[in-house]
Image 1: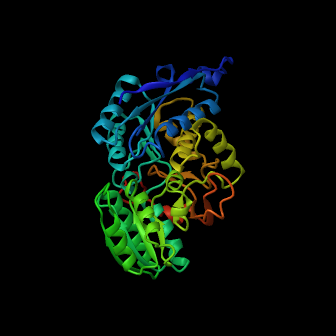
Image 2: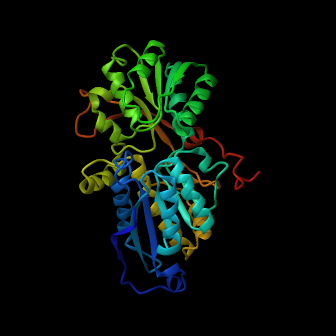
Image 3: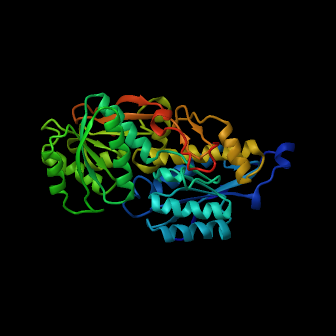
Length: 402
């Protein structure tokens, strides 16, 4: 649970230019804390992989900014908001952490955001999906970099209905995140001319999901929407494959699924699954180049959350360089000035409400026969513009100009 150094602070030996000499970096070091799940159900798509991504970003940036070293530490919040908030407070107050990243699970992310706002320090989340993060709870010190519930639900539902998937039945995890996914997706289904035939809500971590999948199958809906995260989403997809959902002509659409989930399931069980993602390692030369370097360190391909950690840390360090200081609001202002167009994001822009808007992809999981090499899992069906997926800023955010 306690933070521990994971990368030696690195410093360039070059002579300081006048602009660097007059630059201001608090405590003469830029410290980045990766607050994550190291051993729980989110540890594979975040965890050590997110720490490694942050370290790679620092190393690729040169190990220093404005002539000062950059260091990375990590902590385990154990998926508990009180532990996450306590660690964040300790990091900001005692460890002098300048930026916290990652933080899976919305309840923990919102707790950490409260501390960041109180302490006037920066926080960029990659794996917190609650749209309220940049809505009614928005903060000038906090950013949401990879996804929100609206983008994934709207992206998937809108594009699937366009392709003829006009009748839906939802299997929705019985907690706020799952309900938010279903609400957003159902609204799009009906708005675009489709029908919602019903839903069921298994409790979190239900060991036997058979009855819920059977109800969805019996609905005869063309699309079974999986509104939730691990472990239920993986088990629902696996159970659906066992019950012949795909062979029977129905499709499953996962409103949140990660490439590590597909790897865990295996293509025989996951084939045909539809999902929306911010990142796919095999999309183009830029994604492949970075992902293969990541693979060499982690022995698995990165999730969108882990790739997003690298992207955000890099953009943050560039913001410090451009601002000539690590003062949070000045850095955030510089980060909003420049577009984000790296291997992770296409047409990315950081909005005033703290949301990083960028293009998404609707993909379909390949069959075993279609896959030609390890981790060759997705067919990209279409690109979804960031403006379409994320929608306009929420007027509930006080940072949004009225």
